[in-house]
Image (tube, rainbow over all chains, first blue to last red; front, side):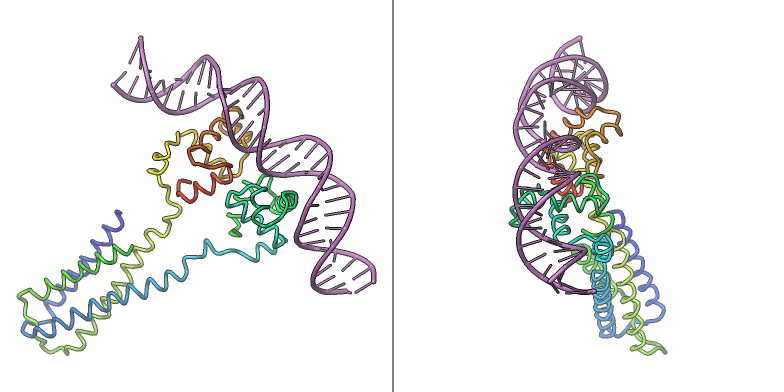
Length: 136
Length: 136
DNA sequence: AACAATTTAGTACTTTAGTATGAACTCCAA
DNA sequence: TTGGAGTTCATACTAAAGTACTAAATTGTT
């Protein structure tokens, strides 16, 4: 919120600066020119914001991007990884089994194996490690 | 974010209107009108990018920002919240007890209470819910 | 001081998680 | 076609998690 106000201040300052500069470079008389300048300014300002937003929104993923190389390096099988993501959602072994149409025993096997591969003692620790490694 | 941009736009519009209404004369002296327009366009374009970058970089972490209001709304006590953060680190009840110099029984009590308050069935689900609510 | 909320801790119990091991099946590459 | 990796599932077990109480000490507030 404070930053928003700061940005506001900067914007106003910039506009006033432009306004001041205009005083010296322009002389009154032609109304059409003023309107044209105003329109151009607004349009380019909006275009500037729009383009910038596009370019920034296309890369706010470095943190949330999944590191597939890491998954391979850990030698996690596809099923193990699938189970890992369900664990991170807070599901129990029974619930994961129901969701993937597998028995709870199978899920336990996968969990045990992925805990070893992630070097985790518990599923909660596995979640933490997996998030740290950006694999979920 | 959208509101901020909208407000920005309105502010600019208002300022430009003020600009136009001003009594300052606007007849080009020796300078070419097109050059002025071009300069204005470039300046506003750059200002637009700059302002937008500022506003976006100032809060690219709305996810990692802790929502204290939410914690209060959930009526989580300080100890319960403390235990919750340790759970998210992947620690067992025993380990949390050792870390906070409390018995495992006490941790279990806190865990049970915070699970009810977070409406979670398991600690893993509590982690997921807490992250969704931005309280950890 | 009296009160409410918090924190602490216990017992006893049920449920879930995790380990160890064995076994059958599929699929793919040597 | 043989072997390895992956997937599936089971049994039997231990460990951890979670529930349901009870209760005492602590803390902050009126």
